[in-house]
Image 1: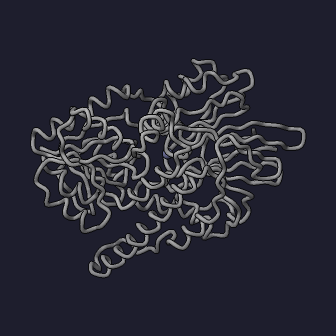
Image 2 (image 1 turned 90 degrees about the vertical axis):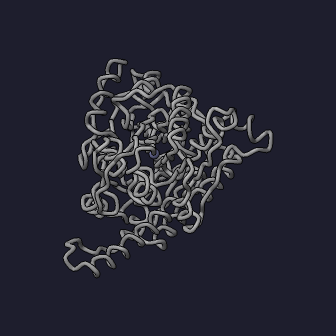
Image 3 (image 1 turned 180 degrees about the vertical axis):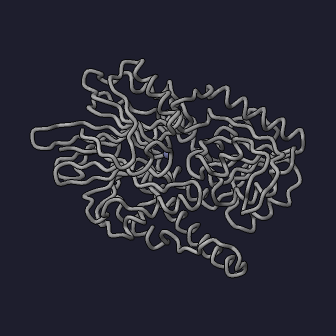
Amino acid sequence: MITLTSYGAALEVTGSKHLLEVGGSRILIDCGLFQGRRKESRAKNEEQPFDPASLTACINTHGHLDHCGAYPLLVKRGYRGLIWATGATADVAQLVMADSARIQVADARFLEWHIGKNPRDRREALPPLYDEEDSAQAAGLFRPVAYRQPVEVAPGVTATFLEAGHILGSAVVRLDVVDGDTRRTIVFTGDLGRRNTPILRDPDPAPDADWLVCESTYGNRLHDDLAFAQEELAQVVRETVAKGGRVVVPAFAIGRTQELVWHLHQLNESGRIPPVPVFVDSPMATSATAIFTKHTECYDEETVRRFLDRGESPFGFAALKFTASAEDSKKLNDIRDPCIVIASSGMCEAGRILHHLVRDVGDPRNTILVVGFMAENTLGRALADRRPEVKIFGELHRLEARVKILNAFSAHADRNEIGEWVAPMDQARLQGVLLVHGEPAAQAALGDHLRGLGVRRVESLAAGKGVPL
Ligand SMILES: [Zn+2]
């Protein structure tokens, strides 16, 4: 009996957690943090519908927080097995988990202090979900595997990590499963990237599968062409600079930030944007860039040819400055001239971006540039929806800045791109596509699209409901 049960990212986008049971083995694919409303997130993240100690192995598709951020909690609650991932993902996940632990510990301390000073505040002071020791322990369980190198992760279960083209180290994971006389190939897209993005290779095909567990983040959207998006980015910068404002970009510290830097590098070099300073204001950026620099095995041919072969870095140019210390970050507040500030977190749930938003949302000269997916009930979504007022650090601020959404910089394939990746699969063999990691409307649209391309069966995975494969 082979069963798949989703415990996170079922009909929603964050908190990926999928449990595959084969004979006596239990394999967890991804273990991400749920992000959204504070109370709801807390409850969902604390909920552990299975005993971590009962798991045989874990597999991590990539190092985004919503795919790896709950491993420390798993370890804290008794998991001692291995976490299989590509080498770059192991490094990225280590950084992401440690950062998440630091933020949680700091948040918990702040809330405790705040409630102590404001007895009428009804919020409950809760301890962090996990701390830095837990995250270090989780990092120690990662086992790096090369792309396209099959590895047995449990008796009768072989995993192969294929390129997903989503962030550095990201993988589409193919599981070849044997259970008595039954053989199944189950492919998990993790998060599926796009073709022709800078630095990363295009997603590998996965032609032969019996089942596909497919993400659907942008299942109801079509992204603009990347070249068009680059011109739009240039235009946003030019217009904002002409008004004397600043461009504030909330971005994941890993992946999106490096990609934006790559585009700004090009625009700067070709004179398509004025030579204003670009600040990457993220304590993680230096470490993240070091990981990018280390894992050249993940680069596409163009990046190798244009940068590595010439001994240059794709992640540095004269106008670009990394602000590592809190002091340097504060100094950015005093800059009156136009500039570009890239800071995390990507969905504006924590991190230095909040300080920039407090400073900048009320000024119509500024532009808030949305370049990534904003989950429901996050500050990022409120900005993307252009609400008249947004809540930052518990206080309402009028949103006067311009908000510009550039989806083409998305690290996720759109509806047609997912279709182009799924259509060449052997449809006679493919028994079904199970949709995860998407809101209901996106899944409905993607389902129609895939059926139109000849996929026999498309279903949304419901949380906690096992599907026999
Ligand atoms: Zn991702």
